[in-house]
Image (tube, rainbow, N blue to C red; front, side, top):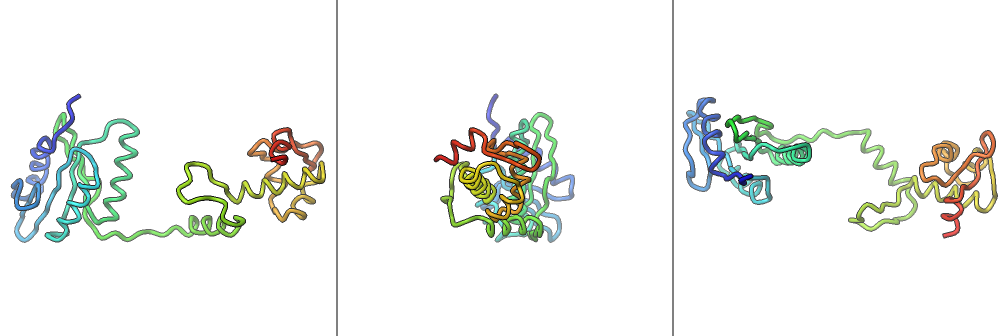
Length: 216
């Protein structure tokens, strides 16, 4: 499949802007595409795919007008859509509009219009973040760790395993009290790491993987 070129995007983008009432010309000054309608000025930067260069160019065009779009070929497949959606979110944060162009028929879709970004805060996500921060003992991870993260949950599980290794089968309420892990019974029942096994109602001991872990 031939890689699309920036020039392949121009005719569909021009037609899209003209349908919106703009007079359109290409390669005017630093801009790939310029549309003018009365006092309104719109600029579109064309690229064969999202890149840092595209975003830098588009942000630079914001010195000319608030109405700046980037235009790229339409994504392919689920992975392409996921990457595209992430880039649309980034463009919104930069105040940029986003157009995609379906090259086989020239269909242009608007995914975002230029607008000042006003982030919506999530109190629930903030609470989860602060809860994890507060529960985690020390600073066991290195920033940038590739998938190997020690969470507060794992630290709690390790405390439970250490207690059971030292004390043998125990009631969940006792484990919770002695370790300070409030949800100890639930964690042993869920057995996320495969370390625990139930020996009686409400009583748990270490399974073989847990004994191996406690012996590390």
